[in-house]
Amino acid sequence: MLTFNEKLAIIEAFDELERKNVSLGRVNFQFQNSISDKKNIVYHLHPNGNGFVYAGHLASYDSDEKGMVNIRDFSADQLHQLLNEAIRALSPIEKTAAEEVIVGDSDKERWVDGENNLLILVNENEAWNIYFGLNLDASFDTYEEAEGFLREEGFTRR
Image 1 (cartoon, rainbow, N blue to C red):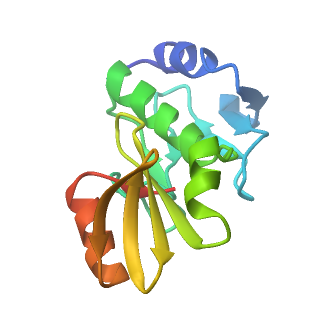
Image 2 (spheres, one colour):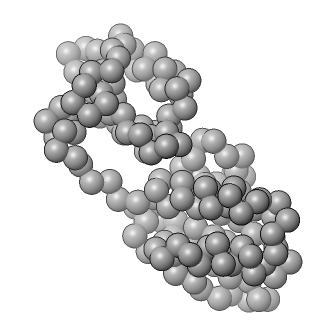
């Protein structure tokens, strides 16, 4: 288990997080650019090493009803990865030129995997099409089929 100071050093390496000291020596870290009401990414990091990270938008973590993941027994790599994913999930989305060309005014969703690959799911002409850049990657008759495919391939909705 990492110590409080080791976890603190990892978290403080993320420039986009702002430290907020709270009671009993605990520390919160806020992400001011969050697209969600959730600003606290790290919640109640305690001097005993316990603490929580908000992962409510991440399907790959076992979170509580508030979307929090206990980081008490996380390794340095695990904590770093969780923070990267949590920040990315709460970051504003900028539309790429390719996305603008493909999507236009159609209904769409963005899906990303652990390597930050982006796929766009678009509802067009009564089909659900998955694009990688400008390339059509797959096409499905129903949303459920497309969603199942994306989840099997390790993608989560963003």
